[in-house]
Image 1 (spheres, rainbow, N blue to C red):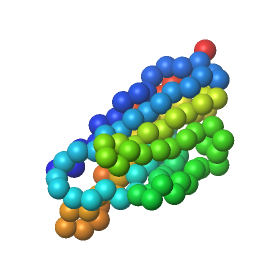
Image 2: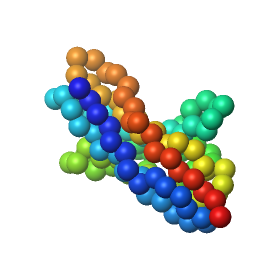
Image 3: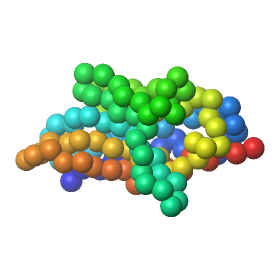
Image 4: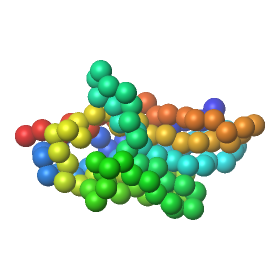
Length: 118
């Protein structure tokens, strides 16, 4: 069974920074692309950033220049550094990974709340 455990969410003032972490553990298999999505009540979950095994990154427009995604393959962990946070970044942030056991499947973390408010 594959588990994703997130940490690092919380309350931050506008202009502040937060770093999210997500550790993947579980069945013997291979981790593929990892990333972060976010969701606010009443809206669809949206992509924040993705990173491939080789380190290629992809960001949503709202994150370009403010957010940085990285991964430590030795620790099976993905990170999201968020700077210059805005109130509209307030959301539940979900960790995501592609994982191969007998085939490729998508797995999600439980979500961590990020609130940007003064």
